[in-house]
Image 1 (tube, rainbow, N blue to C red):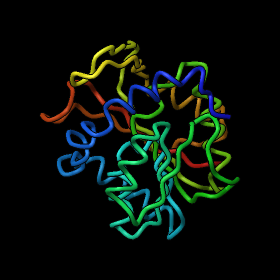
Image 2 (spheres, rainbow, N blue to C red):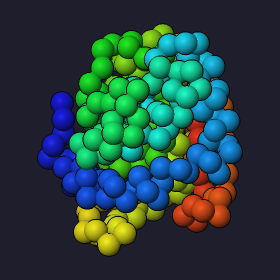
Image 3 (tube, helix red, strand yellow):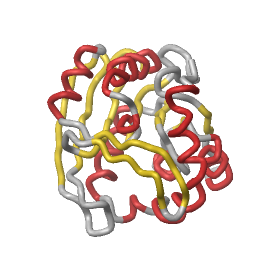
Length: 212
């Protein structure tokens, strides 16, 4: 399943900004102390197994995971983003794919991260997406999800000078935790934080969940 009709405008928007996104966002982990700590937890939980970066963008998180000894596989909806990721991180595998139909086998991954990728799904797509992530995780595999906190939907029709058409759905921690539970996960940790000076001024939510 590719969901070309539903997700085509998201794909086209990220294709349009891929190079500039890499320039502006590709170094973000240098100042994101909390994110680095949580990603470190994922690497340990994976125990040497493969870690999926779902919605990997230009591949900087997958590259960071690989530098810390993980075998990482990045997946992104945008072919342009995947091309940038392959160019900049040639030692990491990247695949084009949709969160509702991941290009991966059942139980292929020991752990997965989805950092600000589920925010582009419609509310009714979240539970199926989490069920699909559960499918590609091995039993007891760990998922780290990050998102903007709130209930609003922000639509961009221009991004860094590029015409786009993309929605950003802000989410509530309790609602996401409930959907994860319905999809077959047990939430083991919750965290909220304010923005770093270099970020957009939104509060951020993180959940770590284990596949039942």
